[in-house]
Amino acid sequence: MQVTIDDQGAAARVVLTGRLDIAGADAIALPLATLSGAKQSVVIDMAGVTFVASIGLRHLVSAAKALARRGGSIKLVSANPAVVEVITSAGLAQMLPMEPRA
Image (cartoon, rainbow, N blue to C red; front, side, top):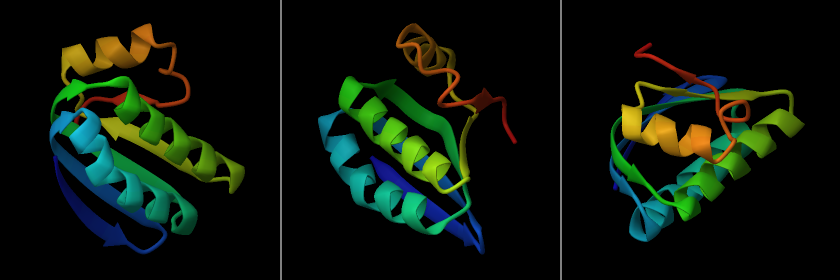
């Protein structure tokens, strides 16, 4: 998993590329935790994510909850249909709002 962060003041844009499996989840754990504790909003570009495992969803949900506790928000953009299906099937579409390319 490759993680690229564009810090934009109170907001951050994170671009993920690769598989959000166990190894990918390890790669995003610290950056997402740090951003969700410091930023008001985080946009995660999921265009390059080809697979999402439950551990990957766990880190996304943890970040969303941390941001929400502080009045912030998370948004996933450009997720491919397979990733959208996993998030929707897991019942997380409301907690992890998704939009086409932003």
